[in-house]
Amino acid sequence: MDNVAQPSIVLRPLKFTDFPQVLLWNQDIQFCEANGWSLNQDEERLFRWWGMFVNNTSNDFFRIGIEWDQKLIGYVDFAEVNNGGAEIGIAIGDSTLWQRGLGKEALSQALEFGSKNYAIHSYRAETELSNVRAQNLLIRAGFKKIKQTDSTIFYKVTL
Image (cartoon, rainbow, N blue to C red; front, side, top):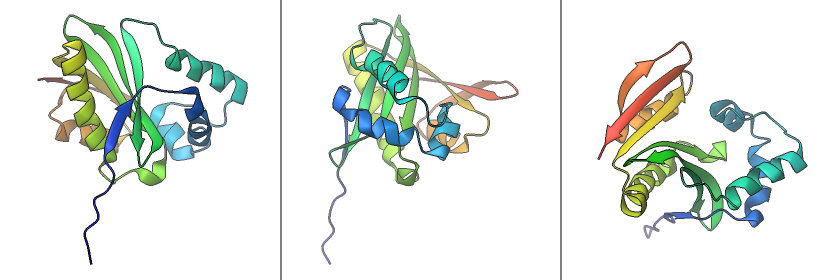
């Protein structure tokens, strides 16, 4: 049997044509709980919200898409981008794709992207206390826990 390579992750700009995927994520209970989304949001409101990221003009926040097998499967956020630092967040939208290494590959590419394109060398991240998968992902990527509250864990890494 031949070994067939899995398609690679591609980071790319978001598009309005991605919106049908966003609607599906909005119906995924596990995704919504893990990412702080309200389940089954109003479609028009969600479309306007998505449009803010597609047309983003902010200098200190931007969101890029994670594509796999020619389909948008998630996104990476870069927030509070300044002085070589940023907060990073990652979400794989379809919970049936979790535990396949896609988030790990996307995070690795995102850290490289931020470093190369925005001279970011220090990253912060946070996860809900209940989101063990995200915590493990950050730790495997070299992030160190710096603080914990009753509901949130904060991490940092310097490249």
